[in-house]
Image 1: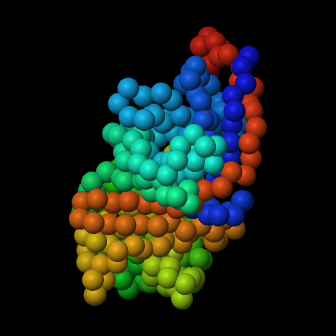
Image 2: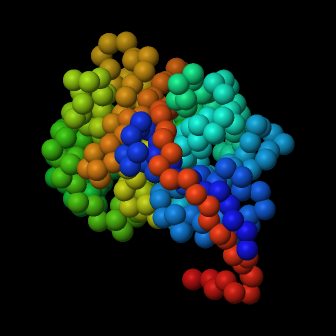
Length: 303
């Protein structure tokens, strides 16, 4: 059995045990798919990033939830590069990252904040059954309809597709009691991986928070994600697409999330035409090693 250095890194925060925790394996060379999945299951955070050599970019990453591999994860990308910066492996500058959705550009600032450029957005309005959405999320459908005339429900993706649902007030967003089976079914009906709900009635609106969001992704094994980079990028592109601001579109937005899970975090979002970037800080909260057994395929029982 071999041991691999394994980190827990909190993304979109400067404080340990806040934001969104990601597992990071800085050198995953030699790990099989089964071993990566076992590590992600053992760490039991929403996603774990496994860094590998690449012939197409500076490095390659694979992302696993506790139950399956996923194509892209924003907070684990921020966490991984924040950890590399903390280790002195990378300096401030620009890097490339090979993912299952293509090669992405990464920028690291002098302070160690990390920005990732996501894929060009795909956005279109959807015909939503408001009653079904209200039942799935445990909320009065009027909370959706109050803002639906100006900001409609929509499919939005910058690498991972989400159903974007604006809500009128924070009190309604905070009171949601989702039926996760129904949430998964509603997301699947609209060919998305999860649902991102938000309100401009943010907790920190006096401190420049643009909105407060919540992300539900039970189909990927994550009932509620504390702070979600992929959904934030998709929502930023959505706001641009539907001209959400009366004045000039903000050069930078701040999306707050995770407060109702006691994991507050803040995602920086920049949208310039077809270019969408999300960014934030990251802090290592746990640094250790994990001993990983070999897996014999004959011993693996399919569910």
